[in-house]
Length: 586
Image (tube, rainbow, N blue to C red; front, top):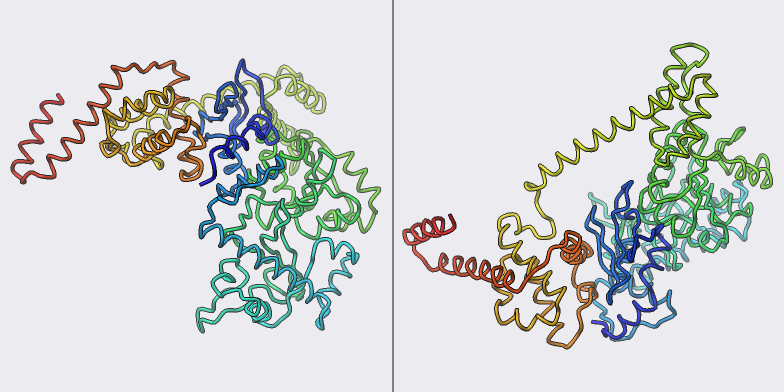
């Protein structure tokens, strides 16, 4: 376990409002800060940042995420506890003490990173080996030697065990090769074989420069699949990373270019635009958008000009907006993708294309005309109905009015007529949201609590435990008094018992209360629940008196006594005892 003094200094050097502010837009609300939660989609800010306490923290009243700055980094970056600590330490120029625990999972991660680095070096050397097909392909695509070297591009030949043999010689095990998704095991023979063969290799790096995965593009004419990507591994989650983000983050621009594939990114980068990234063989995800929000304010979507690319662009627009980014759309003519456009027209024209990119709303409104003939009445009505749906998505009233007036002018109708339709659509959606919220409330009591599953069958006891924990979090100096009244084993739910035990453990060591008590041995979801215990009661203005705690203690002791007695009674005595307890409860 890391020294508490180090954790305190780490949090002091990384104010939660500064760290969170690099990912989300924080709004001042009295002594608090608010933002739209980065962990779930929402329109109204429900995430609160408490900076006016001795232990600054955040809590989302919508999805119940919460914790201190370490918890936030763990969740937003998808990191383990020690990796989050190292990231914050690096940000503050601090050194993590050697006393930090080095468990088996951490050693395994380090081994996989070493394996990936060795594999990347192997693929890179193969590019200039006897089989020159990979190098020839990259040259035909117009890539220069310096850009090939910068991206560490490589080649996997046709042998089924080329990488396997090389990595075994370096001391890596078969289990590690499978865990890194570099090799697979044959179901027929049971032998291992290289996963990437006859492919140009694109190493994927994280923000710290570690090789975490690979993408492979076939060089065979009828090769299938065209692109093969690493699956998720202990060091790689494709939905949380972006190709070339390690280079794009160094750009001084607050704009990112979002391309569709590896070759598009490299071609755009080679043309002088370092601020370009791509998702990794999957549709864009909210986590990837949050990563972009850390480094940019605007994203220019530069997808292929075909129907599939344009449909993907529409989905990306909504995801980018949800995290506070301004999406724009590149409007290409005469080329199907950025790579082809740059080859045909050159970098200066591509730069002008970027500057003239449509804002997302203009793009969506223009698409309302697709497939319709607005010269006809039916075509115009269809396009206007689609436009009403798009306009109703605009939350800012002034912005909505600007686009509404523009659409009314383009279609030659009165703005008031269009405004009435948009208002009705907004009201209809709100009614639908209220119905869904009501159904969710009705269903909530029957839903299983993933953090504290025992609370469902012990509601009264779980509430009593929650009262006690909230009381202690508010009044840490009262812990010794409560310890004399109730033992951890008398807690009914396992989750609350663990929290109580951790509070006692740290009290006995002389530590002041801190959310950091729970960062290392509790999951981010559990830490969020702990933070939420106090946040919930504080937001409702609920006071918890000493007499209330005495009542809660009695509830738990009665339950403990009942469980103990039941365990020692015969079946007949147990039935009689249960009947007496039911009458007593009535």
